[in-house]
Length: 152
Image (cartoon, rainbow, N blue to C red):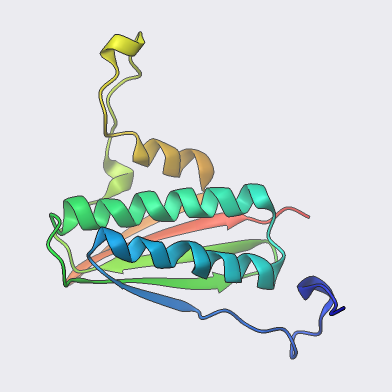
């Protein structure tokens, strides 16, 4: 039986692809979970952190597709992955019109279920589940950095 990835020498551990390239189609989101799973295995990331990564990436990427690109297929989106000793980081870049999700203020919490309206809660989820968020306007797009602390 092979040794767990966390105990394997770095040189023999199979590294996941550091970049995932998608087109602006919601169907392309099906590639995110297997990619994240390969990262989780390679870096022995906890199930709770895996859940947070998948939730935040799916929310951010679906927002780029649905709102940034207005559902138009064929536009590029890249997600770059890096790991440090105490965190993992995902950087999403797109060529959509400018939108700073960190400057967005969601509607106040509804007082009851009847006042609850769909939408506008994804950024709240990002803020809750990520340990660090950063936004940068690019000359031809947007860059959103989402980091997650790793707990031993």
